[in-house]
Length: 283
View (cartoon, rainbow, N blue to C red):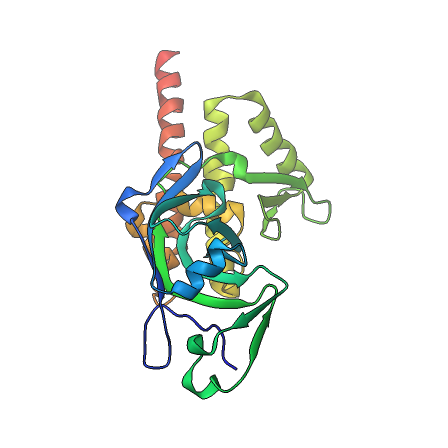
């Protein structure tokens, strides 16, 4: 037979409903978690009875495709309640559904709860079976833009490259890997180590800026597969909401890697040039 038995919408063949609604305007961030309030409506005495007798478990199923986060959070029969989700685990479009699973070893479904075509049958569900599912809610969580932290770049010596060349490797989950030849690797490493603003600006202009262009060109060539990586999230979070929406729009082909790189990095060349000129004037 077709499961589940109890749905979010009532019909001639289905007795009882289960539905919920997230109060998006009241969602707030507390201690690096999103506290998400919601309203639960259950119009099924049978479902309520199973939960009250500890024969069934209610939970909110959460699915974030951007981060591959999937989790079930147990909830009660209370009409107004909330659950919390780690902030660093979800962003972008999140899908929520309330489900009821059989908690006891078996559950005999009364004939009055079955579809008309199955009321002549004896239906016994096994432990873990889903027998009720609510409507699905789609929520978009957009983080405030944050300046790009250059720690998102990892520097690796690549002895197979020419000594003054580098390439960008996106296979790492957490970092954008800049694989550099010996001379360039040592110079980048030196600039990173001295903690000098001018040296940081040189790395931004000469290495990180073209690296970001390469990142978006590679994404354009290879398509999906990077959205769940932490470095991708760092790049997209450095964009304004409008630009981030454009970048994530699969139907929009008007995406210029150079334009995105400038919006993420800014103009480090101008800042470095200004510092050099000021130093010369002060000599």
